[in-house]
Image (cartoon, rainbow, N blue to C red; front, side, top):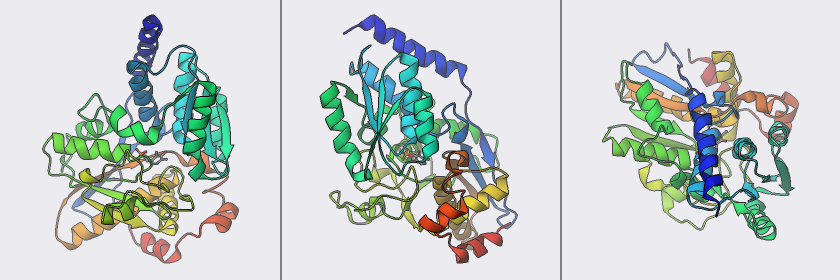
Length: 347
Ligand SMILES: *Cc1c(COP(=O)(O)O)cnc(C)c1O
């Protein structure tokens, strides 16, 4: 084990971090909810375009400090794309070979970006195969399988160290309702929800955590009934979130409530937010927004006031040929017209 190389690798990741700025917390003003303030943490502005930049950094640091990676370790990861883009960035920074194992339906833009950072893409037929194939490749090549779905929750330092929850709470300091009533997040690994849920408990806040699960995902069912062995046969249609098995990083105990979001509503909300913000967001941000708006409506009906904080997980620029292409949408997901009409009345 070459300690000099490991020290240099960690120093490179830390220097990159010091050069980088934090992401913005933006306001989504809605006149129809005068006593409820909505905020979105814009994770699309990381160098690699999504919240997975944080995760990739944490996974590399965790693996390096555990002695799992050295200067000629091939890095392998199973991904729906965003994590692989960010890991490819860090692998290149450290001079390591990187292979992403992904379903062949992964957005072409993400594949291009992984290759841009010098990574290789190894495509399999379905999302269900990515775990097994990653393990097999790691064994065959003597590489290291990062396994975000297992390690996301533990690689992130949930007590602080500038995790996303700490950053959001600090950015809320001068707001009218600085302690959010709700945080809202949709689960892929479940790691971000776990970090937020743990951190609000650690600080002793009253804030609650709402997790929004898309169709074809088992998290909601698991949360309701507790059966960790359930699986789904088809993959989620909302890229980045929803899993066909209960991922080890999904920590149900820190979640206060879950909301099942139909895909057609996620798409309608994504499009609505695109118009409201004047910029494109990814589909999982639409899923978040559906749950945010449901909470705002409920709070208002109950005469409550307060703030709701959620995330822009990634930018829609990655999905110009998919979720932002009407022809693609008409083949894959119908936007929910009834829900669209509901959104059009929200000002
Ligand atoms: C990974 C991801 C999520 C979910 O975040 P987790 O921390 O993995 O639960 C949401 N949206 C996008 C675009 C993602 O890539």
